[in-house]
Image 1: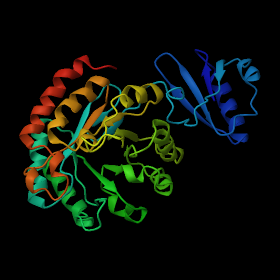
Image 2 (image 1 turned 30 degrees about the horizontal axis):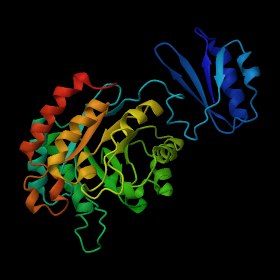
Image 3 (image 1 turned 180 degrees about the vertical axis):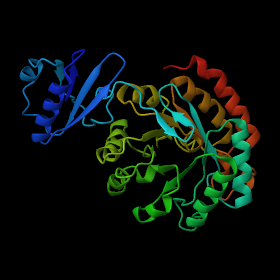
Image 4 (image 1 turned 90 degrees about the vertical axis):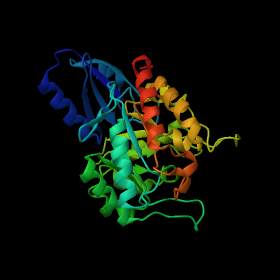
Length: 334
């Protein structure tokens, strides 16, 4: 339920009202926008009388939220959420590009790529330390050593780092990681999501291969219900009947999510298509559709990459994509 408060509402009345809601085991969240102040209620509001609430001096109107996601709902929080990661901002008109190799292979490889993507305009460095692979015989990543190498690249370039967590038992290894990525396979690992809700780190949550937008938002809700509101949603393609691409990039998800939620939305065109030549047009399309950022795989020698070389760009190709995206951003749908 959301309550729209009247202009110049009485602060003492608000304190009394929020205390009354807490006595009823409801959690009130105050959002003060440029023109509207909203008091959102999380919990079982079925026994609250809307007419009674609207009769209160400080309440302009009351409305029940029908969608099952509450904290992530734009009705609950009309203003865009802006997530700050070091000097980088995502959301609220701030566009950020995350770039780097699919997997961390060596210190030289990672630091070289980090310097090159930073020079081309990337704001954050991605790199897989733990790698979820379909085959148990494929390269699984350098694990904790990979995180150490990411931290070395961060120290050298100043780029905040983004890397994927695979298991709850690994959480302590992510103490110095700037953004924890939850992969598509773990989007509905609810125990992991609940624990990440108790951290204070930004979480980049990828859409599952066959998940609806509501299911994605409900997964975000798990994290936010624990108290962590720093969630970045990532559209990375869904599984359809089409086999020409690795997945099918759901561009329509971008404007739809921007209507449904206040959380930032980024797009991963690399995993969505699986084809390096498609990354540029899909990146431009995502930016034009209103995405808040991109996540792109870049490798200094894609043909020899230990993971996903076919979808990785060279640093030169990444620079070209970044210029194309920058050109379309002033005309993006927002």
